[in-house]
Every structure is written in structure tokens, then in C-alpha cells.
Length: 237
Image (cartoon, rainbow, N blue to C red; front, side, top):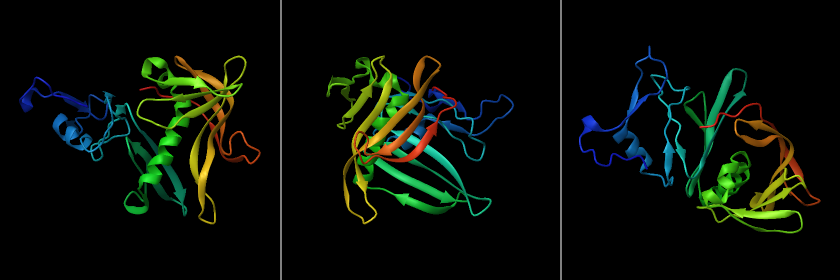
């Protein structure tokens, strides 16, 4: 958690700096006390960094929070011509939500609830394929044997095990978790959910999936591919 330990006055509190990294722009700033109040509502674990976010502005300052738990997945989708719907899927500790708005003000999708939080936690485990350092024993990950070609891993703060399939050369081929899937008729059941890796590339110090398919029914005869992902670049925090 951001801390002002050993500093009692506002004048000596640490300053988080301008949101826009431009010396010519004296944009709005987040005070440490203001940010601490907001973050106190969430169990993020250890907050490692709070760097500026270049997409921020004087009217809408933004920061990136590099924390121990959770994710934020932002998206913009054009609908009805020039009208844009934007928002995010997010997971913070044991809370999760889906929030999207039309034209940046009209709420279009708002979802919460424990079932969504469990689904988001499963999704986060699979997406750790892009954060391989989080899957190391040094970060608290625990590995165990699966079947002949598979291993199972869990990470601190999550009770959801992830099964991974690797090649003889050690390349990641599949990663999956059991996640609740809702059928068109409204019934739901646990089903394998994850990714099938088709190519990998090196970004900075890490080699991670660069082309993959997201699917339900990983490792079964009833696999349903619902999204193909191509990674062009990664901005490591």
C-alpha cells in the first residue's frame, strides 16, 4: 500500500507527480492522501509501482497501479457509426466488474457479483502466460505434476489451479483452468477455459505467447474457439 510512514505533515508527503510526462504541461496531480483514500477500498496486496499514464490529461488524470493482485482490461468499440463504447473488465482482489459506457457517459454494461469475481480470477490465471515471472517459485508459485505432458500451478492469493501443456523443448502449448460457462439456455457448468499457443516471441527479457486462440473446452473434443489474439508489442511496467 502507498505509505507516508515517518512523515506526518502534508508538506512532506510524497508527491506522485504530473500525470502527463511533459515538462511544458503543469497538469493536474494526484496527491498521495487522495490516492490512499481511493485505494483503501480495495485489497490489492503489495503495490509495487504507481507510474504516470500517458493517456491522462488535465481533465482526466490517470495513473497505472502495479499491484500484487488483479487486472484491468480496457477496450474501445465503435458502434452505430462514430459512436464509441468504452470501458473495462477488472479484478481487484476478491471483487470484479464489467463497466462500459456509450459516448463516455451513458452506462451500457454494469455487472458485479461473486460469480463474476470467480470467473475473472480464472481468466487472470490464464493471462499470467504473459507474465511468466509471476509463475516462478520466487514469487510464491507452487508447481505439481499433472499427467504425462502437463503440470499444475497455483499462485499466492488464488485458489484456482492452472494446468499447462508444454512441448519437449519447454515451449508453452496450452494453459487452462476450470471456469463456469453459461450456455445459451441459461444453464451453467464448469468447463476447461484457456488458450492454445500457436507462436511465441521475445519482448524485452521475456518470451511469451504472440499468437494464440482463446477457447472453451481446452483438451476436449468439444473445443470452441471464440477469439484469436495477435500480440505486436508489450509495454512492461
